[in-house]
Length: 478
Image (cartoon, rainbow, N blue to C red):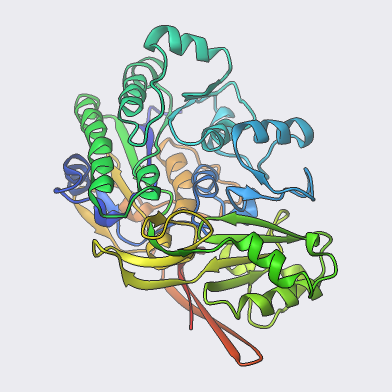
């Protein structure tokens, strides 16, 4: 293969594009002004981290890659249990059923060409583990709690010392992670594709208001590390970087203990209430009916639409056309492991105390702090900035894009045309020297309604489509 630019995927958990301004993130703002940024970039739904990082690395929607949330039921593993997608649980899943994903990711694809992947991740163990879930020898993952391969953990500790203790801002961990990225991953390993994952501002925004002093401090700490990276790449010109976030953010209007609500209010309506498995995912909830039963789905929907916190409702196509609900397939959630019913909590276009738009109900957390997981506009829209020799300089792209486009674009940048049946596309409009074929941006508004007693439920999901790829703009209810 010809000697093409290397690529670094720089993930910033929970970063909104509106936060990339000189006052909050001067280093990233400068790179944004020198590169290409997509102002209509989208998360996949649910807008949670593990779902979206897997979509980044596979180029696929959740229905295709097989993971629909941070908390899920994997029927091929255990149809009766909700599990968190963290490293210990994922190890158990892999031991029992084999590869946890239904499609290959970047590591698997580039390994066929003898190319290497390396990641430094200080987010959740599940996020990091899923970077190289089948432990390919062509990929390494470095995390404060484990490494892939296992033998690397002691080597990293011997060379860089023990990882600092976890804190809210994780400034010391950020520093060590950047040191490992620059001096070891990029300088010595020199992989074709590298990845860095910052857990902030997400961790801090869960514990404080979005746009407040704590949130801004977290942004500043991350930006300081980006400054180090910027100085490094000034001396290493042959590197393309994608700065990307997994989701945006909203503010918690109120919290709902969804499991308690369902158990208490519906026990007299459903003979076996334990038939409903509930997997809260922040601003959304996945429901699994074991065994599947359309009558239970209908009864559950009738209950949900009467609640002030109920937002958009989606059901699996295996139940046929359910009045008032949207087919999961329209949003990319239909697949082998699909939930039976998905609810996004109600989102509203209101401001928090710091004039940050977007408020929603949430399955946990503290009123006034940050949340994500719903189909709200401020969560579906996130950040993508391209910088390097293959990106245009100083332009804004208003064509819709999404996290499903990261993998096909990265593969294109390293000269691999092997995207099997990815749901995403190559972001050619931001790349130098690419042949651009004109294509229309299609906008769709999907309306559904349902009535129960005196309650009239109406929902709408707005979708953009470009070159066959689907992006959810927002969901809302009336």
